[in-house]
Length: 323
Image 1 (spheres, helix red, strand yellow):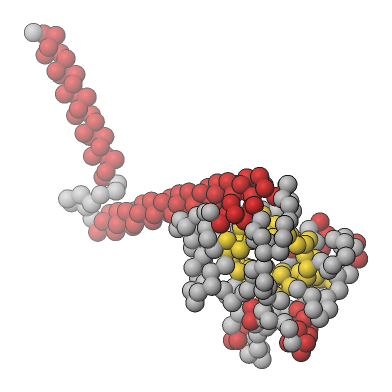
Image 2: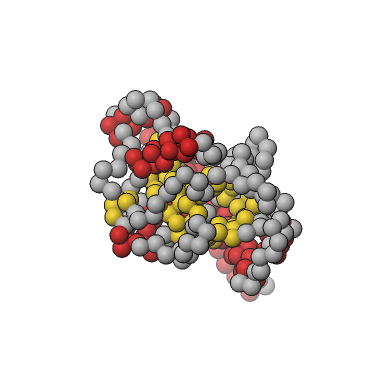
């Protein structure tokens, strides 16, 4: 009987101690009867701070989850693509490449694959020829799942099949902080060494693979109010370059802003590939990389030792933007 009583006393003391500890712990956080106005204000502020901390942890956790999901999907798609590309044989014009068939089985909007060697830019490109084509893949992964990293996509006005091909193929993609999608494009900014190591973009449509030599890149504003004269370079509207005057206007605008000078020449009739992503200097802004397709019977060598930073490049109107 004494043993039971002693055991009960111990259990009671333990429970009482736990209750006191709980009350003590909650006293600094929860409003208690008899709290002064200062204590109440302090506890309200503390509760708000704890709530903010919880929300921040949830947001960061979700960001991490989405980043991991994006990387896993990209890796699986790269593995699938690489199964075919190393031994891909180009058949008759109009015949789909085996790699394209494999990707089309996952996403019928598949239009090609873009690669800049030794970067994270080694990804599928889609084309959705509908009025919402330039918004549809902003927050949608290649497999159709929702993800803020989105998918690389061609301007919906583009033509890209075995019969027709736009003169300027514009590919859009997010500038992700984790360097997925077009996150690595920022490495070109005023960085001649990175350009010298990465002067070529490989782009394969569903029918043929081509190499493109990079000849320009720069940061540019998007809205007229961001410039002193109210004029912006709407590079995204230069898709049809079949008119010589339009072509020259397009290239002149690029050369005016180009951060680099290179030995890569561009002439009327060349096919252009444009990579466009958001930039971080101001909102909204874009960082754009331009390349021209390697011509028939031309090699892919770029004399990058002759490339330099262009000191006369037209910069954004910083005084207006930050005015």
